[in-house]
Length: 262
Image (tube, rainbow, N blue to C red; front, side, top):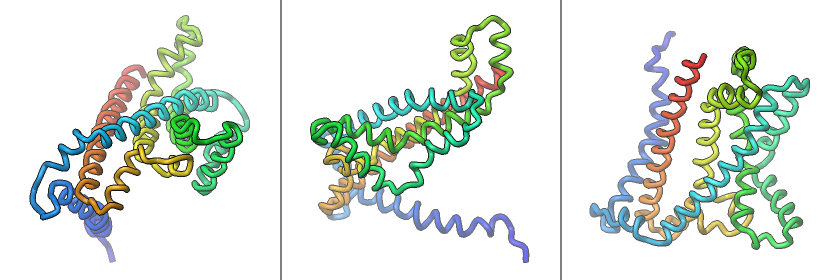
């Protein structure tokens, strides 16, 4: 019995309707209605006029931005060395960076919390720093892997040709390796920045996560304010979609520049 491609896609379509489309419809409904079920934009205007939500958005953005920058600064040299070196244990070293992802998330953050307690003596003294450390520890592999994959696939003849034409090591890196590795950087930034905006579990385990977007949304729903919580979720979803669109365009443009260079 043969099945067409359309029939094989039916289960996937059903899954999307039930678990993606239907929840989004409910989210839109509650976001643009009040307690009486009447259409309103009050939830939307409240988000941009309430100092609490704006402050939480700014704090979440700050944590995500700093975490992404720290991950990039640490991950790029690591990925570059692993991808360009001739180490026999290259795969083993790469596995060491990935291995923490195999361990239970709660156990890893709990262990990190104990380490920070020993270092600082009082975890509550540096909440922002602890948040960045926790997020960096959690998301570092997501930055290393795409950069490593991109650099390892580059044609080594390009670097050799640049050096044959008189470029030194720094010039070769800045004019050949770095531009061609931009797609990996963009992918890594997307994989770190977006979840760091809403990941309140790390902050909850390290200190009070009241000032993170994910926790703020949860507090609205816990207080049975589904309308306000739904609007915040939609606005955050729109921001994530815009960010994804911008980074996707940049990745395509970088790929085009790399193709022209090749």
